[in-house]
Length: 404
Image 1 (cartoon, rainbow, N blue to C red):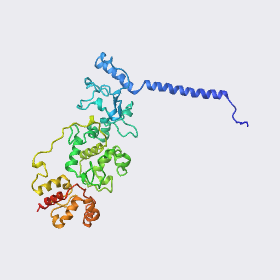
Image 2 (tube, rainbow, N blue to C red):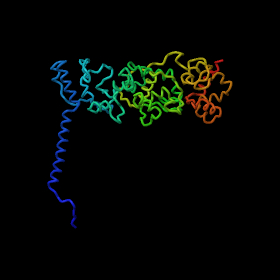
Image 3 (cartoon, rainbow, N blue to C red):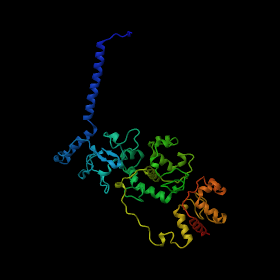
Image 4 (tube, one colour):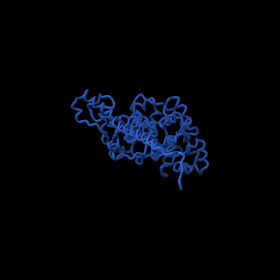
């Protein structure tokens, strides 16, 4: 069978076609070589050489080679090529140099050669272009926490946001030097707010709200911005998880209308501090070298530091009442707050009922009519179950009964 075609064979036309494609290929190859030879990091390194010649000494240039420079961090599964542009980071003599040639401030006992850059500053460590390295690209979840990002959120201190990553390692510290915002948030969590009434944090707390232990790992897709999107855009604030947390702390019901979280009247500084704390709570497996080395604090000696050594059952009950966060929701004689006031409760309820309510509140709220009614009356903010013995419950009741 002979196949026919309407188009006649034309060697000249094919010659022009192949020539044209070859020329395009040649241009692409030349462009690739040009792009490689004029890489952005090479431009910075040439400028660095000029700076050394003019401001340090011609001899300081002799040992410098133009090449990609990186810090390999196998224990962190990272490669940070930031030193390809930030060339003076480890040279104390360049403290007054302009960026990106300035030396890094002393952060002892931290060792940059073992920690790298991105674990603290954020960004894309393996990138070699400024925009890519700073994480200013789509779908990169760790942008550089520097001056530009701080300005977007309205922070005056350009180093404020880096505290988020600092706390990934220093989470267990009560207070850490240089982390004023995070320190403020920790103080609010432990002394002012009653977050664990509803939220589990590190395995302890109520189950009415979301588990906050690793809330910093929660993907952005799981945050509903529909109620605050217009507000953030109008204010020029980023549509980010940090912004979401800030707005939620300022007014939870405006962000999540069905939220049961009470309005806490935080200041803007407190809300930003708490938002940063939430972003820092990540499930990051620390290598041994990054675990903060702090001496364990011994328990206070003597009767005051030991619950079992306190002679009075009411005093022992007070210690249990406060250490198990009962006082976060309940007052005794000061009026109802998050939960009912407990003054005179032993006259209203039987001792066995009280003991069960103290030891197994979640079970009681499902099965006992009175507990169910209280659960609904107080906005379904149920009591978290604490690991208390029957004797512990009796001592707590003794403490409550000591108020007349």
